[in-house]
Length: 236
Ligand SMILES: Cc1cc2nc3c(=O)[nH]c(=O)nc-3n(C[C@H](O)[C@H](O)[C@H](O)COP(=O)(O)OP(=O)(O)OC[C@H]3O[C@@H](n4cnc5c(N)ncnc54)[C@H](O)[C@@H]3O)c2cc1C
Image 1 (cartoon, rainbow, N blue to C red):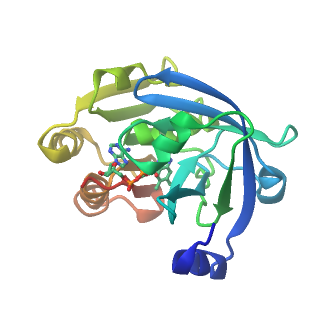
Image 2 (cartoon, rainbow, N blue to C red):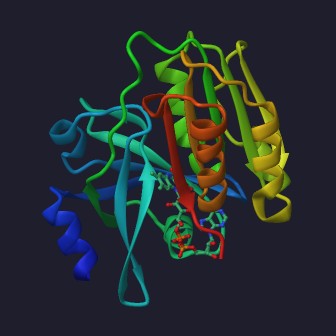
């Protein structure tokens, strides 16, 4: 697939390309779909870190459509990982829900980088939704002794049945998506404490992620090295 200017820019910034092959599909529920993939050498070549994501190149009526997805249970010796797709009306979940074993998709590794603070944070505060459950699960796994407080926004009840990997010392609160995400922002901003030894991780709708990230850095005066806030999708 021709990737246009976007492909050129990503290449110029060191993007590395791989071809993934679907090994199996697993619908989780009507809002969530899991695929198991052969990595085409990606994991051996690029290594793995918590919250690691790849750029997938979907076909959108003949035009390249590049979107980020998070690796689930990457297994470098086996050269496999899974991907979990929140289902809404978009080219990415359309491809995922109709994919079958043997289908392939191009993936580029560029831009994903994250390391847990060392020593590990005293507490993890995470804010997300169905799109960032895979990333938050990877944080639960990587920092499994760290207490965590997590707020997850949901637009459909089925999202509350997502495969979360929280432990007994992790608290998860579900917040309905109301007022174009403002309820999540208000709830989180009212409840988040300031803690310079904590890690704050945000992966939510773009305007919510921006507002919450700003609140953490400006109002709570948390050192920016302790904050990761990224728009995971954009409401239209
Ligand atoms: C670093 C990173 C990692 C990500 N990892 C994952 C992952 O593992 N799993 C996952 O499901 N998503 C993940 N996302 C989010 C995913 O990339 C976006 O949801 C993307 O917009 C989906 O593309 P699309 O084909 O639906 O098309 P788009 O053209 O982006 O969107 C089409 C329509 O769907 C709406 N929409 C898009 N995403 C969502 C959503 N999540 N919820 C509700 N409506 C939406 C848009 O507002 C638009 O109306 C990640 C994003 C980032 C930045």
